[in-house]
Length: 523
Image (tube, rainbow, N blue to C red; front, side, top):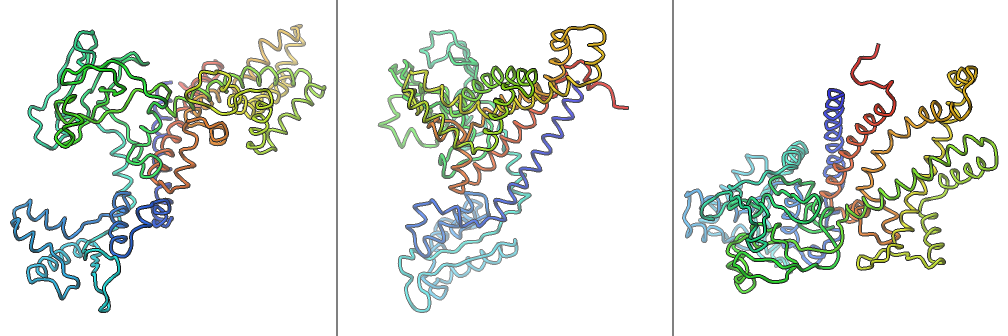
């Protein structure tokens, strides 16, 4: 069994990697990169030179290309000691046209051009005067080099950056002694409550390991998962963080800041990360609370995360679907071609043929007429608002389970071993419970892990219709706004869930049916 699971897992991960490369090729080479500015208000307000330089800087940020400005080139020469600061300051001044450059500027412009041209970059100069006329709203003259990133370079960079291990050498600035500190009494709770924690100096996160009152009670920041940073959907935030961050109203608790100040606050000090120079820049804001630059924190909120809500609704709908779908499927098989079977068949055909939005709105309309809440509210405590979304999510699963359970049951009823059991005098009840039901349920069991795990990704239509703050709308929003990193990250998440669900499905099927074994080779 272990060998089988490992083989399936390795092959599954390789398949996901291939899928992800294909997605990257489609997004970053086949799609017009100009589309990423479709929802960018800053881009639409800029003109001429300013628009072009902004465009290239964003393309670099999105990972389309390597982009090096002339000013960056001179800065690197200064840091390496090849030129001094005075030379850099004089050479960086570009004229309105190449003819207006100083002799020193011309020298280093030529060096810049030769150096990056030899490395395969395309060098572009933007002047402020063209054809003898000043460029309107063009800003300053600019010189830069750019080269498209190969898709393999992008893929390797993405895969190697999925997992990031925090360490005491993460911070580049002089931060004093770099170390890890273990304490039995977390200073966030005033240093009196027994709560072990590991804290770092020089790391990106202040807390690397800590305990709190939220499941699973022990948390870590040693290892961080990166699915891809968003540029539109949740600007500057990783896809995984967007899906797992809590939502709702702020929940203040009594905390003790590093300076010793104790107050009611929604700040979660366990999430504190390093922001260079933040303490000095925000002395009025941070000075009474923090003693170093670990000042960026998330907050305590009363609601669950997007993934949490999607998973909750998904799991409840899966439970409802199995509680209703399997017994109805069995009943239809026992009453084949009778009224019950015909009604069940009509329901299956209806759910299969009618677009999902239609019956979702039908359920919502009926719920409204019955005074059941039709919109999810993070601040509400009315549990009835869960009812309509769960029913809407369960309806197609109920139809699927009814159809397959009926089919499997009827197939088993006509099998030779059932006829043999009857000839041996077994009652219909014994045949049903000991033979037919057990064999019919085997393929149904295989789909349980997939149903549960895919609850994590939410339901596109249902979450939109009922305003559920889940993960279902992330992919749609990302596609609409051309937030390519989010698309790639969600595809990776979907792919990994598929691999895990298939493996767990096989394991559960083997557990239900002892005839299935992964330890022997087929003959």
